[in-house]
Length: 168
Image (cartoon, rainbow, N blue to C red):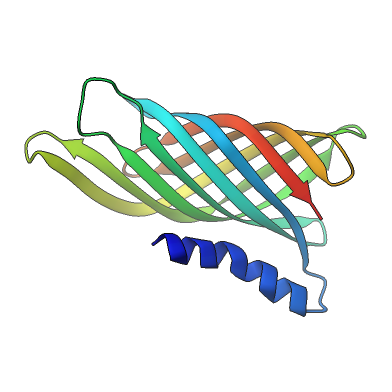
C-alpha cells in the first residue's frame, strides 16, 4: 500500500516535467508532526502533498497518516487518507500567503474493538478541506501552519500542525 501511495505522489512530477503545456509543477509540502482530534480521542499525524498549477488554480495530491496517542490501551485507532484537491493561493503581503483547498479522497480507519480483541477496519469516501497560512522564508521556501479536516461517514477528523513547503 505504501508503494502505491509513493507512486501516486511522484507520478505527477514525472508526467508534468515531460509536457510542454501550461500545467506546471508547483510545490512539495510536508507536515512532519501535527495533532489530530476526533470525537473521543486524538493523536499524532504526518502529512505530505504535491501541488500542480494551471493558471491560477492549484491541484493537490495529498496524503495523511495518523495514530492515536493513549497510555492504558492496546487497541489504538489509526487512519490514513489519500486525496485530490483543488484550491488557490492568495498573496496577503509580500511575505505572507494563504492557501485554501477542497476535494475528494479515500479515507481508511482502523478502530480498536474490545469485543473481538482486535480492530475494525473500514474505508469510505472523504471530503477533505485544507488551509495553509505560510510565511515566505526565501524565494522558494515557506514555513507556516496547516489546518486540515476530513468529513466522512466514519469519523470526522481535524488536525493542525507546522508545514514546510518548497515552491518551484
